[in-house]
Image 1 (cartoon, rainbow, N blue to C red):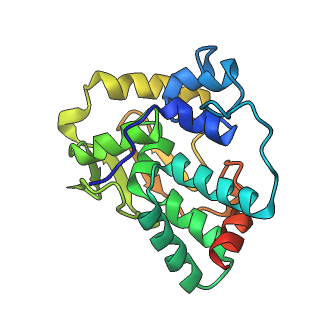
Image 2: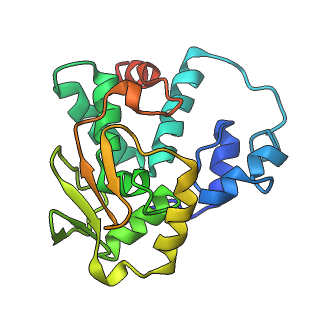
Length: 208
């Protein structure tokens, strides 16, 4: 399966924003964006030419990179959101937020979405008592997401729980730290998604 294998910090520098791809490192002075606030490469310090298309493209690229998706899958999510009733941009974010790897990250069981994706692929996460190893699995209201019994003592999960204390669990989720499980209370509303994403620019880009 195709995936990005380069340096995560280059992605943050390219988008000019913290995408929180490296967990705790993003909150420290070691953050690459804090040290070099310009895009990577020889032309990084040059002033880019502003255009409507550039703004739309950068917003789409930023969103893809936050959730760790490639173009084909991201476009498929957009097409699905466009077919649903309601506001297409909000539908898109709702679909992305209800991916299992994102939910594991939001519940605090992983320090980053990459780490959450790895946990799911290795079979460390259960949904409604059944092991699920597909990161793109979409949860629904009423689902119960839990750390598998064999993974409860893993150091990576324990350190993630300590790290997650710096952030709040979204209102559409409920977590039980003692049982290492979380419930899906509802589908997320736009006001409950705390990401600096201008989804309308993505809709405009794909609508051309």
